[in-house]
Length: 234
Length: 234
DNA sequence: GCTCCGGCTGAACGTTTCCTGAGAAAACGT
DNA sequence: ACGTTTTCTCAGGAAACGTTCAGCCGGAGC
Image 1: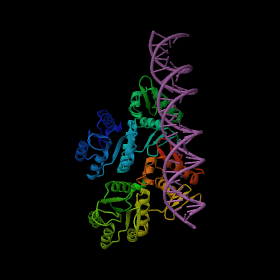
Image 2 (image 1 turned 180 degrees about the vertical axis):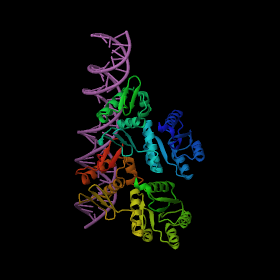
Image 3 (image 1 turned 60 degrees about the vertical axis):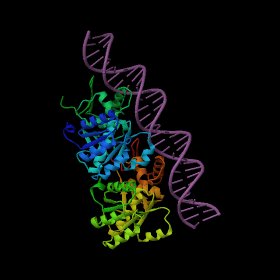
């Protein structure tokens, strides 16, 4: 699929927790980004200087220095690298103090879809990046990521945040079979403890809202997963 | 995204506090301006001479020389660069007197909407800049920035200062989803310590005053933010 | 036909998010 | 100094949301 064949941009991911770092970098690479990782502020500044990333994903809490300090250093380097911060959900102080200088931020625990959405949005804003289409279309189903809106056969459809994220994940992966585990890993927060039953529920919700007319787009493959695609002359 | 596709003008931002400098320059760039920053009077004069900005945003309190002195130097350079001063709210009389040489001024702590409004106003006055429309319109909702007036379906609406700033921010960003944090950062003073609840209140006020008739223009996107737009069925 | 199994969906629950009215405090104008 | 306007906070209630679960359905295999 086309997503995998092109390098969208070069990213620098900075987080001291190896799990988060690997989760993010693996997912971002799969989405077509070139990724370099750093574990602390010192490394971050060093790599930023060397590889000149198009965007930096930066944890606010780092062992050696504050994320905002790192962001300041990056800005001093010139070449305006946009920054997407990662922050704890209850860090109210951080938000008031430093997040204003961020181009955007995501709260932990996040879902991969969330992080990807923010990164795409910032790249679109700061680079006017046309390689990152805001509008996805499969058959007469349309989704506009920026406007956060969905249409089926031209009529707008109201979706909840989770429904929207799920549909977006389906549409980015049109024609590819997605297992429930895969969906859970991308659309739900990484600390979600529940089972895949919730995916069935949300697929059900989605079908009711966007897949009631022919041709059906969301198909079940028993024992395998789901796939969104136009039925080809089968 | 028309805001990003055009360079409105070239600005020079002068402030010794890095936070303020970054906050302003990032926001101004996002609004389509080309921005160069300086940290003190010496740098300011130097950059002004080199890049010949269309307007200078100048902090009155600088480490090496008075903002008024800097303004004097700029004037001696000819080519009339308009100046918007940044000053503390408790400015004494002598300083207020000095502000008469300014084309306009904003008191700290300011809101980004305030600074942007002053810059736009000065550019309109001094350059007759038609790229900066004074009148915004979405559906039958109209806002005149210069006249500081709002109409819905032709009938005038009275808005408080904050309500006006909020509506203006919505209208400049028609069709774009704005999070409460984003709104807070742009419409409220940068030192505002409260939470996003106040945004909900003011959106409520706005709706009551300008959005009681169909079609509704201000829409809530649960868990995401607000957006002002004409409902599109296409 | 019967059973087993994976998937579907309606109902129920607790939680989150949002809206709005009321009121206190500050700013403003006269 | 006084009343008015404006700003902000708070809390109740309503609606939307996320999650679980149990019962149902239908296809696959026996």
